[in-house]
Image 1 (cartoon, helix red, strand yellow):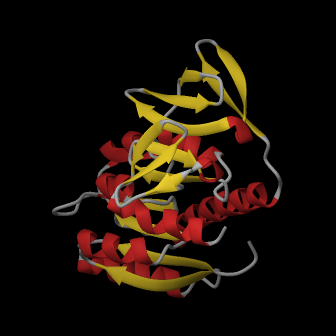
Image 2: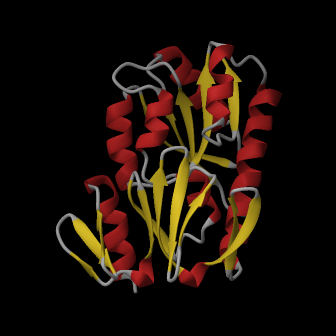
Length: 234
């Protein structure tokens, strides 16, 4: 990506909010779109206005940073911010770009985090520009190739996911998020916290469900707008 990275800050600490804002404003490759001191307000706005990068505090009232990530219906780059090291391991299970400890005393460390986020965005953009035909997923002890055109839907299944293809239903050792991030976003869409579907396999949609062959799948309200936007663009 050659343009600026659109970013926001979400932190209930007013002083830290101002510090991150000042760091962003002196960084040419960043464009500050907004700052929020309330996580619930922020997520409602960001669901309507997807963003490239979020600087996100972990410890906030009503909704903490990790809950915030899970609640988002899309996957921006996340740089988590905390004054405690103890969250670092949990943070990277959410595929965050980086983890900054408060106080952020070094601009060089801030720029290192930006570099990681930018590299991830560039890799994602590069993947989206080429035609992806298959994906490899771990089934038992084997990496198995799944043709993307053959996939109907993918379901969270405890610590696993289930992948429904034309002829099989396979249990795969992966998280739903990791599979979603590996899929081409123009072909697949999250419709619920537990389901991803291939858009061109959808046969019909009603108020709260869709149908693929004989399977009825739920659509959550938070994911419906994106789904309908993709359907309308076909």
